[in-house]
Length: 197
Image (cartoon, rainbow, N blue to C red):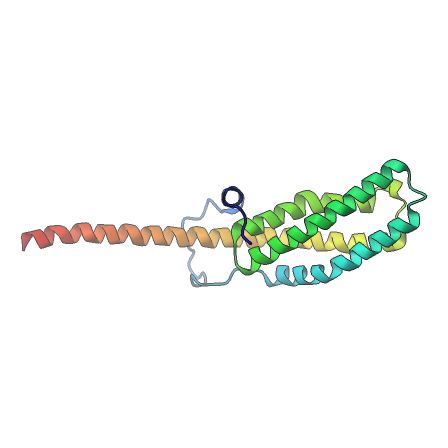
């Protein structure tokens, strides 16, 4: 399942503007070869453990909500249910984009993962963790803290991985462009020699 073309294009453009290092003109001396894998092992391990932690987080949240539902005001009941539903929906998409973006080194998918982590999941989990009106139970605080640590680590790790991927893709593109230009220049130089003979 691929991202739609326009979404992929916009996320790719966004990634190139945010994560590319404009001060670089090409590959630096001593860099690894062109076929180097730039996916992050730390990010992948975090995604793996997060995949197993999320059902535990979900069951704990639903259990704690059931226990304190009668104590919560009506507006908090609606807000908490909405936040849990949103986090559940976003988390599935976010983990999928993280796996695909990191393992297959696809910049738009990893950028989507990073944006979902930073702009949607982290604020929602921090709301559940820090809002005093929700009367958080100790288990809730513990699982929200663990989830927040996962999200913070994944956001930082995805940013660094994206930066590395975009720089490698930019260097690869420049080398291909240089090779294409040198091949065209070689063709131009050979033509007059052939015509003279």
